[in-house]
Length: 300
Image (tube, rainbow, N blue to C red; front, side, top):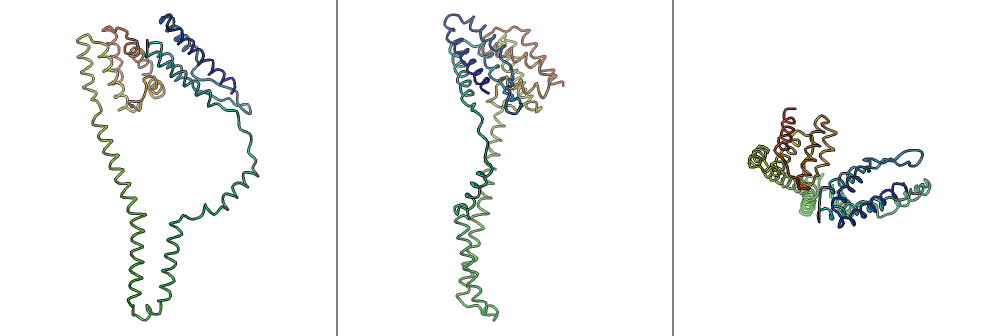
């Protein structure tokens, strides 16, 4: 565990060193980030207690450092600062193993809690119990009148109050909560419908991509094509698309759900990041190869 914590700290220091050297040469910074990303394993295994090994996933850190290599200026500086904070937080979360628990002390503590009066019935339980107990005692005293076939005014008043109390409890504790739950469900359904209606149309995105490509605006064409591919994979249940998801999270998901398409999607994602974040100029062949990958997804 201590080795893993020291490794995280060394990564944080390495990122800080690379960030501080960016003012001298952005080219060397990009190369250093690529080298660092290649050196980080996707998973680290650390020997734990009783001979077992604990696995720690570093794929997100590895991908984010690789993505930072394509950024420049303030964008790269902000990304590296975010990575350092995450590494420091991961390091701080690692604690030493806790001592074993004494069963006898645990049992004594549990018995003390269970014997505490504050964990008994709630206030409403006590009130309802006393009210209905009172009504039962009164009605038992009136039993001779009931058996004789005559009910006086006092009896009618008591019965009416008891019925009103029962109706109040039904409305307060059963009907009203169910009505509130139904209203919440209706609001949720309405919100889902609104979200669904604002979702971009895949065919419209593909038409936009072809139009942008016809005007040699290949970066915008690839952006629209990539969005259409994400939505289409969401329809096919290959990924769970959301606006907060990252491209490389989708790459890892596709690697598990559609291994036959994973390599093509990884290539298109790399091209997308280099174009959008790295400002790389695209050629017509780049767009055509990405479009071919999308058509292969549709066919399969």
